[in-house]
Image 1 (spheres, rainbow over the protein chains, first blue to last red):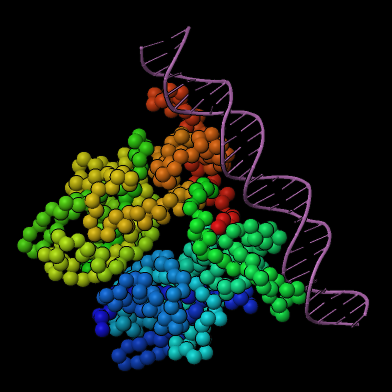
Image 2: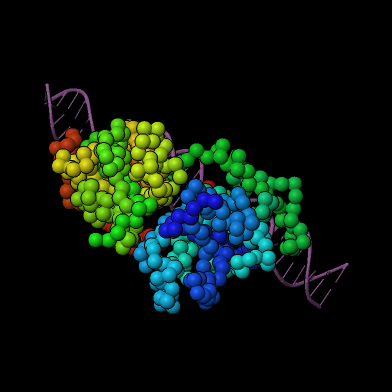
Length: 243
Length: 243
DNA sequence: ATTATTAAGCGTATTTTTAACGTTAATAGG
DNA sequence: CCTATTAACGTTAAAAATACGCTTAATAAT
């Protein structure tokens, strides 16, 4: 077993999109304070994160965090920022009693976010009591984790406008309106359905299937899939100065 | 004096724009290997970076690196990625002799880039023998520093298209053609001068001065300045899905 | 069975932006 | 005074974004 690196951790913002409720969520766990003498439940929530091992890459550590939390592997992940203010772990007054036992050293955390579907996570049988929270209604958060989530969301907002990562949040087969809903959830805006639809259908890498989605809505809706192959073939970067 | 954190460093990619040569450059120093017994000059170049101190923020450390290297403070800086592969410091064979003395521990580095003008740095009286190298003709680089520079450049390419950071590389008063040259240097592309000029002049935050630049070229050229105030007032983000 | 409701989907006019390229203007140097 | 050179203005056509009217096919209510 490889050695833990004590002062470096990887924290993961696990974004999960709920296709039925049309909400972007974050997976959070309850926080415990542990010292040699006692273990106390704190009344707030935190991201999951682990310390790095000596022989791991940063990406490895992030993947390990996700796997232990959700059982999932191979999901889209993105390192977006390192956090390391000296007071980031000791901001709260209720933690002073434990300060010298657990937090006698600075911890720098490298923050990642993951993109997946809430449906893919079995939230019931979960040792960490993990729960989904809508990004628009976050509960009380521990440490600097609210800041970390907000900066993850900012990065996601920028990135989803220029890269097709939105499809990481949807099933393989989706309707145009479902894509629109994802954008609206992430960006907190309203889009014109007719113009959005036109734009999407014109993309060569959005492929109409011989299949319709029935039952859910009034009129059955056309199903599409995203072809990463076609996207990659067509997209050598075009530079558009847009200040 | 505060304690050094042994396994966390901040490496800085110092981008300097040379307005006369129209090149984007990186400031590099010669690499030395130091052990208790000897100090040897290695035949390659590296970025500057220091270990963090216990009471510093990451931004503080980055600013300290730049100040010690160039004497400058308050320059534009951007944290862009953390690097931490287990083998990142020990890739080269010539370093095996020193491996167990200096590099017995993993070092994670948080990488920043800075934007400034080559003119602002006094390269002559420099204790580190720092030198500018064009990003298109980089010399032999130590560790994983070539990768770090390339990823910094990638980030800069993306960011300069959506934020007005280009002006960090230019003097307060500049011509439209000088702005175009910066874009061309960073992006390695050619732009149509007439269309570029039109686009720039139409921006409300690009302000024509009562002054012309003479002597350098044939026809005297109009000088402009960038107003950050106006930019910030006008720019609530507009969302343009551009996949 | 008929009708109202609702989400899906098509179409068209207007404005804005991009892209391609022709032309004129002001200087330095001979 | 002529020429080379860089600055700067202008025109046009194509493409993209925006705004908005209208039809269609299902389900739910009467």
